[in-house]
Image (cartoon, rainbow, N blue to C red; front, side):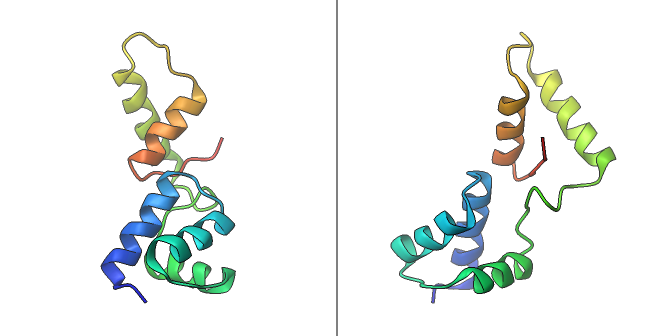
Amino acid sequence: APSDDVLRAALLSYASLKLSAKQRIQNLADEHQYHIKATKLKELNKQFNIPTVRKPPPVSVATTLICDKLDDDVNKTNGPDAMKTFLALDGYQIPR
């Protein structure tokens, strides 16, 4: 099994890419030769506090994050999906 630091970094990158659980398990097997099932993936996500859309930040925090991203969009050309992607790349999973 890979070290905790490597595993945490991999799971965080998979979360920012919005990969499904099945894809995360497959990537762990391909990239780190770490073969697990869904239950172990859930345990690892919980252990390393990996962000998910189902556990979003509080509404006040999410609103602030979105407003900050909207302020950065000078030309107002980015839609909701782009904003959601930008926030995911920053490590914040926000639902639609």
